[in-house]
Length: 239
Ligand SMILES: [Zn+2]
Image (cartoon, rainbow, N blue to C red):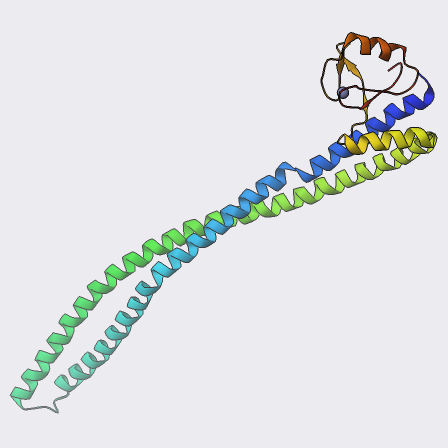
């Protein structure tokens, strides 16, 4: 095979390598995982908001009950102080005061029970929030790892692509314009693959069509680039 055809094969190999590296760069498995992690993070956010909204009215209940209990305690302390101060001597009045203290104590007990129920509900919500929070931290950690891995893979591939492209420039410089133009034209129409070889003695490596034996004969005798009759990609004589 002539030297320029060897260079043409080398050019195709290098161009294919660049195409494959670009494809790898665009389809990094880490990027696909990142998309799924981001989706999970949005779901976690939605779930957190739902739990928070469910929790909010119970938290308001807790505040209301706490406030009422505090007010009751204040009133009760005041009544007790009055009861034992000796300032009130009228027995009817003392009796009424005692009744009020008892009724305040009853109300207080009811509120404490109500508070317990509310706190149980809140505890459950907090448990759920904690669980979701753990999941969120895990996902955020994975996202950070993936972003770093993507950045590393991209920069490594960028260096390899740059080197390969420099090699391509060197190869192209050795080829004559006519061959380069033919190569570029076919490559542009054929997904970047311009140069093909025979597989199993009769099949085009580009389109995978078995060629008729008369074409194979012509191909074997060719001294110039020979297009595949099916896909028009080019066979290199002697390759
Ligand atoms: Zn073909």
